[in-house]
Image 1 (tube, rainbow over the protein chains, first blue to last red):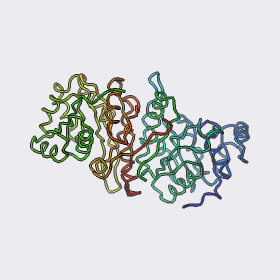
Image 2 (spheres, chains in turn brown, cyan):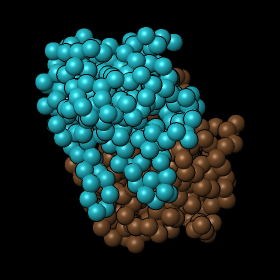
Image 3 (cartoon, rainbow over the protein chains, first blue to last red):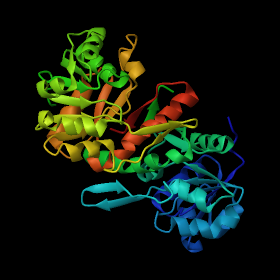
Image 4 (spheres, helix red, strand yellow):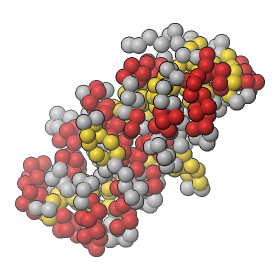
Length: 217
Length: 217
């Protein structure tokens, strides 16, 4: 098992619910966490709100100063942000957990992505980074709920770099209850991102915070 | 809960592993099952091999004579077959479980579908049928294994017709261990079909017959 205890984790868009939820769980697990935002002040506020020694700074500072960087920004602006941070992210594992979704009165639906998926878009604009796709199906509500000690979820981890996917699986494993599961190559990321639309449909129908588990492994 | 015990189930392409596996489990559950194939003789052979009173006939006969029809044919030929059977399938629930996948030396990947997904393709060529998408992630090996009494799987059921999706959820529930879970509208079928490529990656990595469970419901 890869040891991730010494890694510092940066979370771009860490003031949003998904990013803040992940930041909280990683900080609780004892990892050094740095929340990024367009506004350093809002990043610091979010870091204070989750505790655990997390700090906050502008996205570019976080990208430069952390070992492994999670991208949890809205899909709008995803490409432009990563393009602007390519130098800081070079050589690093970059974990894309962006779900390109649209919403209308019938619910959520998957948006087409020219590069195939948000993760492949990240790989296209970050050719010198090690892009992994993961953490798409985490429920921000669950991650942020102090009453939830164990999170009932398998995190599908996709990528073409075995050492990088192993690292991100180990990172998922630090959240109690969560298991990082290898889920295929980056070219199969679209459907994992898009499945979030189905989980939103499940949540509506069953009044739940649905996740997935992989059986027989 | 919808009562499906009186329904006769037709399975187009029921001589393939996925269709035969489903046929076997439905017949074991006491449902009247009719296996369809291009060749009536091969359909009858498959029906005899699974037992449980299943019968076999040409696809067109099965489409005409059963109440609910499952489409388990290879993606090649899917559209043409359904176009040819539109009159027989009119008014019926048609359950598409086709996964449009390609394979190369790096594994499986999702094929683009002009209509959005195999299920939407079925809906486009069967405007008078009630198309539901389901049973994409069943493992034929598991369904056909007499040693497996309970199948550890949630079947995502997608569609725009509530009565039809309720019926198919109840149909999934007749297989011991399986739970039918509403998974959204037909416009979100692509990613459920395509996720089969990821499960194939999981199977390769973990030497498993992976399925999925939905948590928190």
